Amino acid sequence: MTHTQKTKKIQIVVVGGGAGGLGLVARLGKKFGRKKFDIILIDRNQTHIWKPLLHEVAAGSLDANLDEVGYRSHAYRWNYRFFDGSLEAIDREARQVVIAPILDETGREIVARHRIRYDYLVISVGSVSNDFGTPGVRENAIYLDDRTQADRFRKRLLNQCLRVSRTMSADPTADARVRVAIVGGGATGVELAAELFNAAKGLAYYGLEVFDETRLDVTLVEAGPRILPALPENLSQAATEELEAIGVTVLTGRQVTEITEEGIATSDGTFISADLRVWAAGVKGPDFLQGIGGLETTPGNQLIVTKTMQTTRDDRIFAIGDCARFVPEGEERPIPPRAQAAHQMAGTAFHNLCALIGGGKLRGFVYQDKGSLVSLSRFSTVGSLMGNLVGGRMAVEGRIARLIYVSLYGMHIVAIHGWIKGVALIAMGRINQVIRPRLKLH
Image (tube, rainbow, N blue to C red; front, side):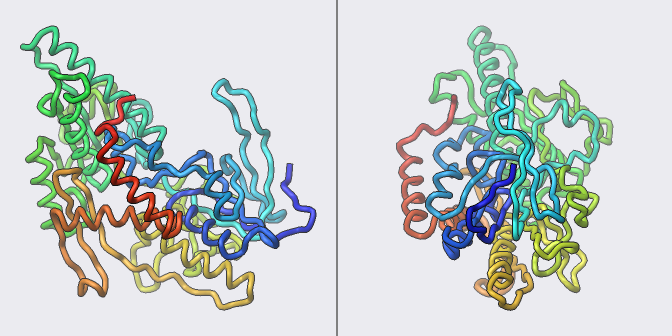
C-alpha cells in the first residue's frame, strides 16, 4: 500500500520522534503547512518521552503519563501527519520506505506491511543499548532504551521491595534486602543509582512502613578507570563521593564477563549477587539500520553523514541524532550521542531541507558543546558547561547545576511545543510535583 495524494505534494518523511525528530517535524509543519507539503512522522510508539528522564520513570519518581507527548495530538497542532510503525527497509530507487506489519498483543495483524513514498527522508531513530556480545545480558538484564523497558524495571523493583517488606514484617530480624546491580558508569547508570535511593526513601509513605533506603543495596559497575568519563576528573570524583555517601557501591576497572539470573560476574573474579540487573554500558544504532537501503553504515549500525547531515550515498536522505555518525573536519572523534547534539542536528537538517526545496545554500553542521550535566536526584547535580557565556569551561555542582539541569528539560519542552504552551506545561509540571504522589506505584 502506498500513501498518495490527489495532487502530488512534496512529501518529507521523518522516521523517529525522539529529541531531534519531533522538533524537526514541528518546525517543518509550521513552515510549510499542509497545502503543498505533506510532512509525515513515523514512530513505533504512540507517545514521546524525553529519553534523559527514563531513569526517573524506572525508579518510579516520574509518572510518564504526565510528561509524555501524544504524537497524534501534536501532529494536529503542528501540521504534520503521524503513522505508527517500524521502519523495515528503504527502497531508494522508488523513494519509498517499507513499514513492518503492526501486530496486536496476540500476534494478530492490525496493519499489513506497507510503503510510504518520500521526496526527502530523515532518519532519526536514536540508539539502543550495546551489550558488546556479553553472555547473558539479553536474557538476564534490563535495558533502559524506552518507556516500556523503564516501566518493566519499575514493576520488578516494586515487587522486590514488597517481598522484602513482607519478609521484614514477618521476621524483623531477617536481613532481607533489595539488591540492584547497574552496569555502566555513564549518565544513565549514575542517575539511576541515585534515583533509586530517592525512591526507596519515599516508599514508607505508601504502605511499606518497614522498608526504607537502608534495605537497598545498589552496585554500580564501570569497566573504565572512573565513572562519568565525559566530565572532568574532579567532577567524576565528586559524583563518586556523593554516590558512596548515599549508599551506592561504586566499582571501577571491572569489566563484566557474564550476567546470570543470580547476578553479575566481573573480570577480576568478583560475583555481585543481584535481584535486578540493569545494562547501561554503551549505545549503538538499531540493528535494522545495518546497510539499510545500501546506505553507508558503521559496524555500530550508525548511518554515516556528511557535514550537511545528508547520507554519503543519497542526498535526499538525512540522518540526525544518535543513529548518525559525523566526524567534524580536523577531529578524531564523532559527535557524541547526546540530546543537545540531536537538537542541533535537527536545526541543520531543517535549514538544508528548506534550502533544497527553495534553491538556497546548504549549511554545514557545527556542534556547539553546551556541556554535560548529571543529576544525582535530590542529592546533588554535577557537570561542566562550555561556550562563550561562561568563558570556555566551567565546572558546576550543587543547586546551580540542578537549576541548569532542570532548565535543559524546559528548553526541550519549548522546542517541541512552542513558547506559550511550553511555558504553561512547565508551570503545570511544578504544580504536579506538589499535588501528585511522590512515587508512581501502579
